[in-house]
Length: 163
Image 1 (cartoon, rainbow, N blue to C red):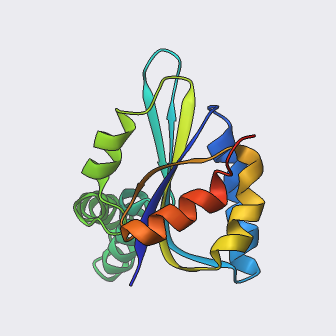
Image 2 (cartoon, rainbow, N blue to C red):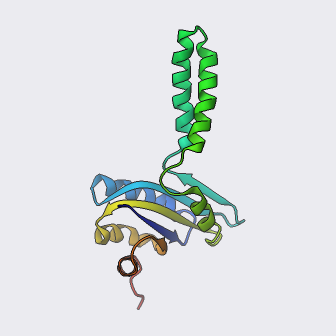
Image 3 (cartoon, rainbow, N blue to C red):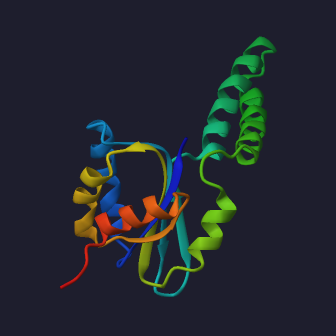
């Protein structure tokens, strides 16, 4: 079973800096992510969301390819690609998986301007080793689907008590 973990960061750039670390941690098999989303709340309050999986673009590309193949059969590959791309984009935008877009939007509106956050859909992890790598970015735990005990252990790992 996967768990949702949302980490907040004190700067707009920190979440983007963490993404390559997560890629490295996945290659080392210290964390397995099913999905992630990065949110930046700009100083003017505007929210920018980047998701790992863009289902609309993938649907458009797949639809265009299939439309072109079908169009070749009927001697109209360009029209087939256009129609297939449009239907693919529509179906891709309707098909959503991973982290709920509404949840991302709702929680994104609660983070402070000038900060960022990562929404992580975690399949498995070695929490202490992951926390060691991420601690330098000063994450704060904003939300989890973990039990209270597990959440407190994770909070203690990533947010050591200040002296």
